[in-house]
Length: 328
Ligand code: PEP
Ligand code: MG
Image 1 (cartoon, rainbow, N blue to C red):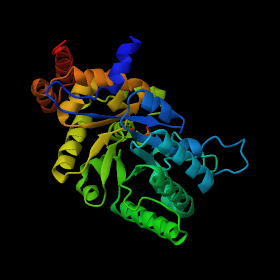
Image 2 (image 1 turned 30 degrees about the vertical axis):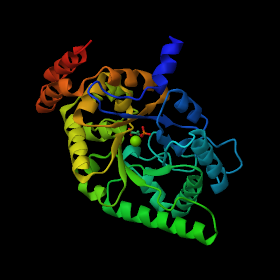
Image 3 (image 1 turned 135 degrees about the horizontal axis):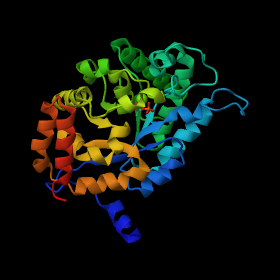
């Protein structure tokens, strides 16, 4: 069993008809890079940087310094040994509260979270951007911005990145001048207005956890509505399809880094829709790879088409089950 897993680790994720799918890992701590490598990940598709900022009650400073962040990001970059590391900027608020933020907000999921919060705290944001840029001198880094919805948010973010670069240059600090910048697509408005993003950014990454929350209007932290959380809802499938086809036309890379990417029940559907990059917790990577190795993309196409044409939950589920049986 062990030997089999070891061999699987080195095998690229290629379908039976020769289509390669890039499998990446989601990490929360720099140390997780070791697990990502162990699982055979081609890189880190999502480094949730929140952990550095949360639960700091025992520490002297409420916020991590540039130096502290730089050390953490560099450790992740070095840990991945030359593979790309996508670092997501601070995504606080809602289910990820900061010690220093207001707690009694009426609708935290719709409030001042993620990029919205960062743009109201430019100094805090600049400190993080500088730390990430400095880490990019040690290996390939990409910057990923969460919760983007507005055109001005892209512009302000790109301006702040340019400012951080200028500062570092003036201080003779090294960084990769061409570090790619991408947006999380996790607000339905962003998915529907995708052309707004494709011209200004280098890549996109879909956060299905929030995309489902906002599309179906169900708080992902509220157990009383957990039964309404449905990744196979036709609205979700249509949005994903819109994103992948629009991104393909615009020739901008798009990945999925939300929970759907690590759900083996959905691997054939997502790859059949055209997704070629999936990022997930490292522990799930081997079974997703196995599913890709067992998939013949051309054979699943008719099933995927049928699912995307259907607005009947029963038909969608039955077709998905039939597709799972293919080549088993
Ligand atoms: C998502 O929303 O799907 C996502 C990947 O980000 P998070 O779960 O950290 O909000
Ligand atoms: Mg999210």
